[in-house]
Length: 298
Length: 154
Image 1 (cartoon, rainbow over the protein chains, first blue to last red):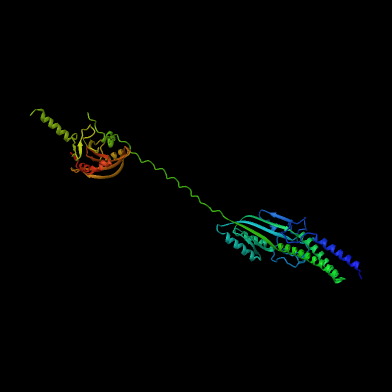
Image 2 (image 1 turned 30 degrees about the horizontal axis):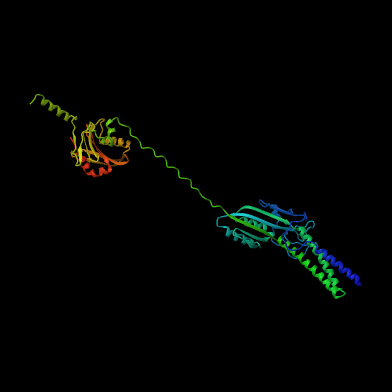
């Protein structure tokens, strides 16, 4: 049977362990962070964070999931379920992130600038929303000339293709952010916290007195909060990887102004044909000039 | 009776008979006064406002008909800048058909009119001209027209 000193030492040790874990990074859901280092092997060939300003390469879209299922959400740290590829086996689907042969956890974002017919922007925005919903997605935001949707990552390629068919694509970019390492680190931390929680629960069961029990309970509460934060962050990353962002900006085709060419100048009117002057001198005297020239008085 | 008098009558008759003696006369319209002429016209009269009426006759040489000489006069006037307004055929009291052409022209910034009537016989071409400022001519137009239609061509 443990004496009081031993119990106190264990409580102090647990407290130090809890405090040490709490000094690590914050678990507040935030915008996806760029991976801190080159992460887990990428069987799909996608780099940790890729950005493409021209037509999305088939490689990038090929690494995007093309099957129909969305990621599972089971809260398990070692099984990020987003974006299983077509044809992969179950073991590969469930392989822990970061392990050799495991698939990376990728967050996809696509941005498209398109030109449509004059007056067709509202109708096109509605079409984009309909396409998103038909593919299991939803509307995030819309303005007069743009719309943002999220669709299951597995349907991103098909959705992008349908959206682009609504007009003339001016610019397109698809980025993939690899958050595998981040997710893996969160998983490790979660396991560690859960182990601490389990131990504290054991200590609580053996508390010698009320003050000791209260101290353990306080530690348990803190650990519990940290576990919730880690789980929340992991859930956030899984959701982001499961549903890809697609933003579409629209503009109208410029109005074509048809400049009518000026009418051709009328052909010059040929001068009237001139009659040859007859060798008749008196003809030249016909007219007002001679008629009205009166003789001068002497 | 002097001895040369019958010969003079014979010569005058011959001249008259053979064309050199073709005569033309016009009644001077009211408001007009006949004026002495040089050799250009056989007859010329003027109104106080400057409307002039005149007749001349020339040899039908080169030999032409009414169509020929009226066209020759027309081309000559159009060459000088006259604008034809009207054309019509009229008949003299002796039954000779003539062609009357009416023209307009600007002189000294004012519109003027000119009527030219051409009669043609085998030996002669008769040209009747009447013209002046529009404002003055319109006042005597009827008298001028009557005088032209009553031209005596002998």
